[in-house]
Length: 132
Image (cartoon, rainbow, N blue to C red; front, side, top):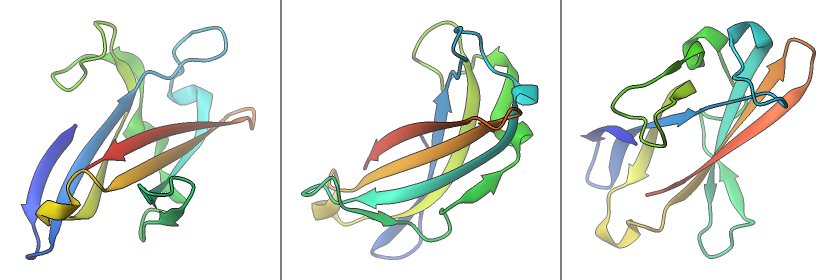
């Protein structure tokens, strides 16, 4: 979901992208803040012609997040969650500079990877694909 758009120049737009998910454990129970010790993320621009080619986006590499800022103990329902009537427990807003040229629309692909480390030291990776 694109939250806000701000034109920064003739060639770039600053966009805020909101990413939401319901994260569960192996038994299907929603995880909460006390289950997670650390959260970090990275954003990569993906070459749409060669999807295996990725370039890290400056300012969004191994970026640490406060667990309380992105994870909820209870499922949340608001206007942005459209997947089902149950809700989400993970939400993060990322600001990206994107090209605003007409010929580039639909060609910009990004991959956002989150790594959640549980209080037991187990790491879980969550990925989102963004096409602009």
